[in-house]
Length: 442
Picture 1 (cartoon, rainbow, N blue to C red):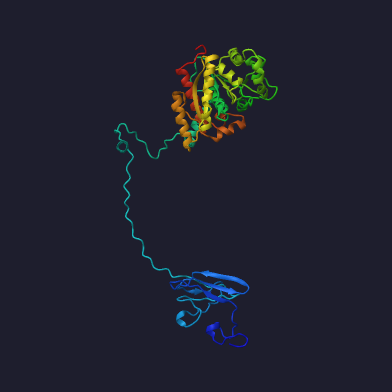
Picture 2 (picture 1 turned 120 degrees about the vertical axis):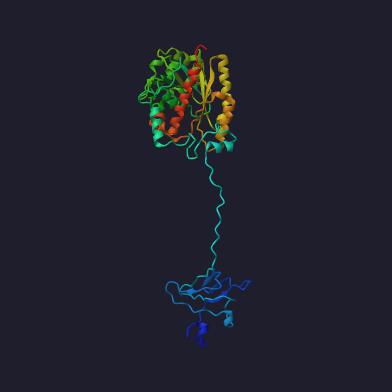
């Protein structure tokens, strides 16, 4: 070693006359004799640890730097090499350290696994009979490739056919007409269960198929008037004038644009004060009944859209109606207040309207992905029996979009699942009315 810090032995410095680096190389050790890491320390930076260099490999240059000389190992003599490994001193401001490519041991190819899966069984009536314990005549043939769920989105051709059937432009498709006027009160004190949506879409479906329908909007919010695109701003004659000022109903009813055989009695914000004003009126519970009875025209159906409450407006609707249609959302809260509604209907039947009955239950906002919807449906069907319609209204975004365009879903998107479901519900209501005609004198 010279006075300037140079060594003459190239095996120590790597090149004759080169200065000794200030870094010190440390080598990790493990009980099995393998090198665990190489760390480099210098006075002006933290140590850098290179994890687990392989025991054997080939050093190659990185980024075009010259190959580094091989460091000494334990077999070459004394030194700082780790047992059985190679040491690469890392210098400051030097080229990056060489990377190692460990040798990959040869692995034999995996043995072929024989295919032991059973042969496919043809889906025939015979196999279905053997699977379900039926006779060959009792087992229907259903292809696995044929969709069997009606709630699946139909193909374009089927959707177009249903749209034509619902809109009925030629008037050929007709629903049965009842012998007498059926006055149906759509009531539920729970808000947001689909009372207005049900009223509007059932009325449009029946009117498009040969029935004369009147919609009485008894909700101060006037949503049924909005859904039918009927003006209901302040100053428009509405149902408030019929209840408070005894204005004839024919002077208030308006025709619905684009829907033949459909009329609507609108509701304005003035109806919000009718609850208080009716308190002092004589025969306050039967004001709407007398207005509908005095109407000179004939209707097949009269739908009364009730507010989400059990006040005097709802009582007027229950007294005027013969049937009660209860929309039930497939949620727990919708069932919680149903018992109170049934009790009020029984009170009205006992004291004010003996012909009143709960004739129809419609399940709305059905979500087939949840078990709760199935549980609610089973509970309602077990309690009300045949009064529950087989048609179920699913959650459908088209049903919610239609009122923003002043339309029902029947005319907004007649091929949607929502329109198809309401059409089936209207058809079922019409067929029930023919089988069991309702009389106002019953």
